[in-house]
Length: 473
Image 1 (cartoon, helix red, strand yellow):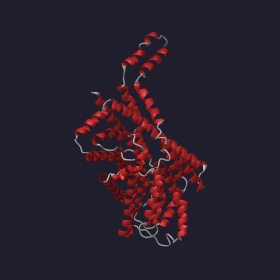
Image 2 (cartoon, helix red, strand yellow; image 1 turned 90 degrees about the vertical axis):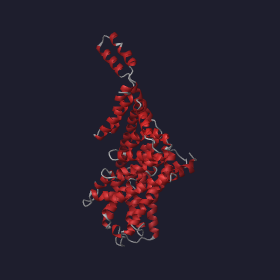
Image 3 (cartoon, one colour; image 1 turned 90 degrees about the horizontal axis):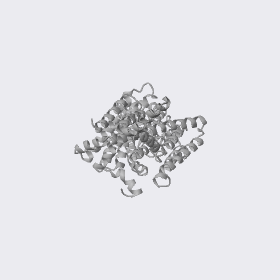
Image 4 (spheres, helix red, strand yellow; image 1 turned 180 degrees about the vertical axis):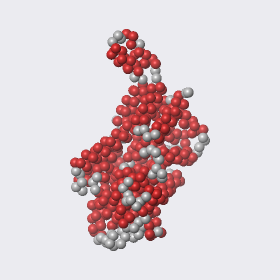
């Protein structure tokens, strides 16, 4: 068995262990160190220590010398260096700050007020409750970037309101599930920060490139909601004056000024400072974290318990991301050293694919991986396998990253492993079946596919803003 075969066996064992339910980060580290011990085995380094065993008569000294020889392998040097590299990565510094902003905003009781205001402001639009729920989801998902939190909170807040307004239960469920996943794509997205760290692409260009595709997807969602409300009024009845009373325009503007605009301004301040070069992503994330605390304080929701819980959740999630990177970097370094990447590149090159065929194949694989794995695991572990292949097909890693971000929307929306559906089912009223949620998700899944087709057909949707702000590639 040659080294390349060992590398493929290493990858196969990892996939099997993940499907068996082993923790991904520790599985990566264990396999990286285990196979790395074989890959970097150097008998000379070890026996230099072992040869001293004969000179030592004391048992304790002999044991120490034996361990010194056994662990005198470069894989341990590699593991320590990779850990230091991850922990000192300036791009990843923004992750805990954005997470903290999201968690503190989530606990600031902003969403209830925001949804009520948008519900009143949009009362004359077809499918007004659905439109208000979708915009609230999009704004809240953008601020937090945490799919489960958005879907769960909106499921408790907006779903009962839509059901009370006689909305079709599948339609209402689909709106919340689809809207809750938008934070993966729309900046300031944590997923894009992780992709930037894994791929070396500028996070600033990624944010600029993701803006138009994200707005395109939101636009398609809104068109579907309003279009279905007009074509099928029974699915989204117009609200009566008893359900949503008429409110004078000055009062509506005041409600928007105290609920919608503060959160929107916080997001735009963070995103704008990054896009226009006024702050690095880490500095902008710091502004966002401070702004989130001030916003919570303004709404009188900044208590010590909420602050402590937000810090705890931030530390836990950040640690998970960092150790995933450590494991992935160690695993991929050993995999590459054994020749695994070369074998995959030769295999894909031998298929004689066109760039479009390669993109479709890569997106299909990522789509399937989205069923058993979280987006963080896909970005950190499997996307780097595709990155060395992109130059073979003259594909820009920026374009590939935005496609992956769009594709990961489908992983949360595709039955039978649609995680958004399970998040919603956990808080939905007893009359909502999982099949109802799956049925409501499918049209929105179609919209995601349409947006991906638009990106394939018109790549300038991705490249226009990065080229406009920062110059051509």
